[in-house]
Structures are given as C-alpha cells and as structure tokens.
Image 1 (cartoon, helix red, strand yellow):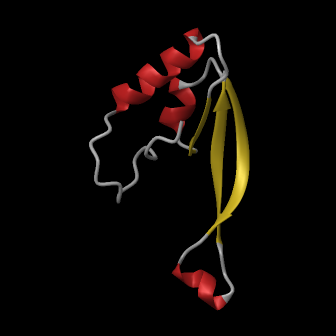
Image 2: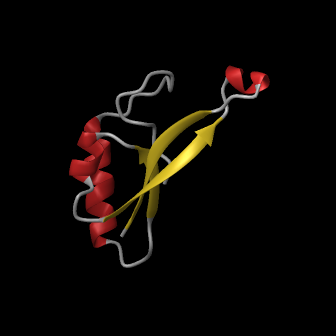
Length: 80
C-alpha cells in the first residue's frame, strides 16, 4: 500500500488518521503478505507498532537535483 504521508501537505485528498488505524488492523489480520511505504512519524510508528517496521534511508528528487543535490529522508517500510 502507498497511502499519503501523514502530516504532510500537497496530496489534495482527505485521508484522516483512522485510515491508518484501519490499515494496521487489516495488516494484523491478513493471512497474506502486506507492505506499506510511509513517512517516518511518531504517530505512524505508534499505530503500526505491532507490525515489523524497518527504516530505509532514501534520496528523493527535488528541484535542487538539477544542481547535483538530492535530499535525504528516512522512510518506513512496514510489513505484517
């Protein structure tokens, strides 16, 4: 799953926190494998605390990349 990042602007969609709670509940009950990629935020870590959480350092594209720069960020990969 690739939900909107929590507490960030620019998505233009209504995605309230109860959607993340429902996702975590689903992942905990699902008999298949599920993976979520999401931003690293204390609220997200808390709601998915019963699942496997792995930190991933990434470089992502910005307008600065044209100047040879890319921003670093820590994101979470969460699996059941």
